[in-house]
Length: 265
Image (cartoon, rainbow, N blue to C red; front, side, top):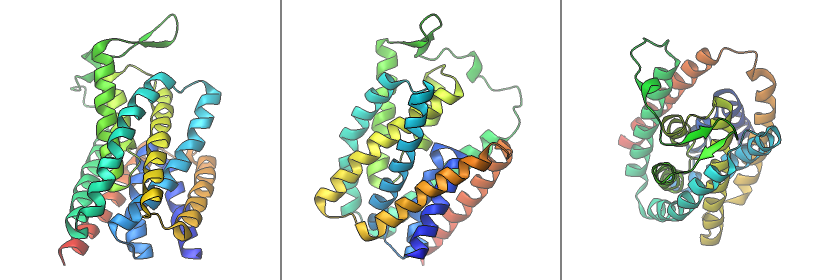
């Protein structure tokens, strides 16, 4: 029990310090720390990440930074695809599922490390006009067909990966919102957390109904994650964002390599 609590606490700390995508480490921690298979760890990771994201969403709603209409649209498509990913995960052998997860984790590590490096001035994204624009007068998104389509497709990717790998999808949502909208950073993070909370909870419900969620592990792990989230937020503002991103990228890459070694042995 103590080990599970400490694993959850570690996940909460990582989420607080690195943002929404930090929850991707929940599943590897359960695999190595609790000896679970990928399919067993996925639903537990979803519950912990979903509850932590819900806490962040409530804070974002109070601060007025959640774009709730965008979050609902993304979540609807994500919720529709999450059970499909979960169904596939329960029928996929552990070894190939672990390998897929490891490569996704390596990709996330590379993207986070790349983002932590100083800008070279060659980045063209600032010159692009995203399909979702904020109305400067109302402070809300201007809804168009390209905007709705882009956000819906982002939800499909987040939902499918959420069910398949037991991750919240923050590593998909944050880059997608950065690419397809001109929202401020705080609004992107808050909206992403809202999506993660909704999509993760749908996956948890599906896992519970199918009998694949081990509550004796899930509850202490999730409790530890919430405690870690609160503790992490107390120190996050005092640490360098770039240094935290580099650290997260290095740890993620090492965990991905360890997963590959474990799967290929």
